[in-house]
Length: 280
Length: 210
Image (cartoon, rainbow over all chains, first blue to last red; front, side):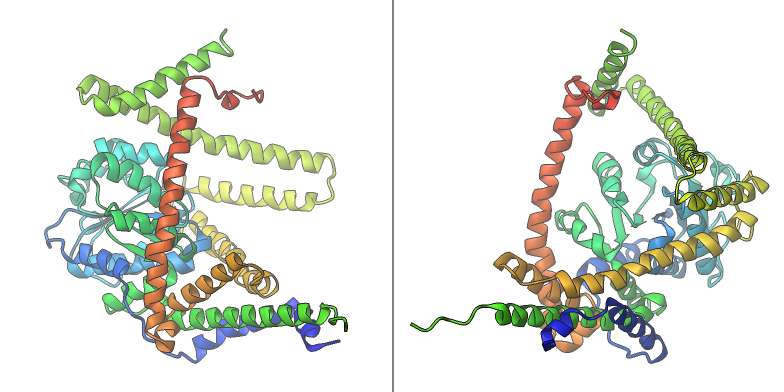
């Protein structure tokens, strides 16, 4: 058997093993690659940084399921930390049924790091079905959609919601999403009501949102774990985003090496199969 | 009459109203619009019930018909009973540390995260076996993919400062142009489909396949 046949016929379990090793090793031996901040991430950071300290609450919609937590949880945490550090109130909500438990966990993690009080500095509205209807309804009256918070307290009784009636009173809405929720926020909150919207999405989704960034319909964008890592660098609070960058770097390089090797072997095999030129 | 004309008439009236209300800020119109949104949210809540009933029916039939993979159906019923049971222990609200939250945090999150993580292994294997520069288009795709993959991780900055810049260019220029074209096409398609449904030309939503 020739070398390229052997290479192309390699048992895929060896590839799986190599991937596993490549992911794990950087956690034990960090390489500390520098994370350079890109423009879409800086725009979201600046949008929060520019809010006055007596601002009305930022709304954080955590619209994702457990499958995408490694990429999206660091974003939610970084945004909450940024807001809490600046003394900005945050109202968390979710339009994904599985987002409820994830939001509770992220809120608890961020809140315990700061001197913040539930109902005053942050609140959790819980899950509500009906994506478009909720988004449109919030444009008229938020308390009509969310009469109570996640724990049964009337939203009208929460000090954080004082003077917050609809999107006119929400300086920024950030949708952290594992599927196309940000498109809906643009269609049903930005377009009819002019709500400023930013998004944090998985790496594979990020390319879909560049048209919104370019048109100014979206304030900023965090794409994948890299986006979270950049935000962690900006708020100078390194966490899982930055820690994951070494593994992601190694994996990306490894996959590129595999693609190159696969192509070399493929062309060598094709050349080997080509019939020898006939002598005249 | 009731089975065909009434749903079509309701669809027409609701569709036209939702389109027209956007241009009429009068309070009576906006109040009715708000009421429609409330109805919509109530209706959508029932979708979860419908989904659960459908799931139970599918797996009940598998068990009753002794399907080869009926063991998984028992797992579904066990999971359903466990989550419903723990949910009803504190039906008013789910707080951190409650039984439902413990099940969610310790079973559902790790299971879903594991399932998604497996993609990395299969993507690597598939890229090795299938990502070939067979044609000019495939070669362009391959080169763009390599640049973006390097440019989206910090090692790209270490290798050469031009890689992240090239990545941003790919995302901001060819990607943006293609996405914008697709989005405009999808938008026009959505409008055309909505019009067809409102006018009763497209009736597949009524069932029966016409």
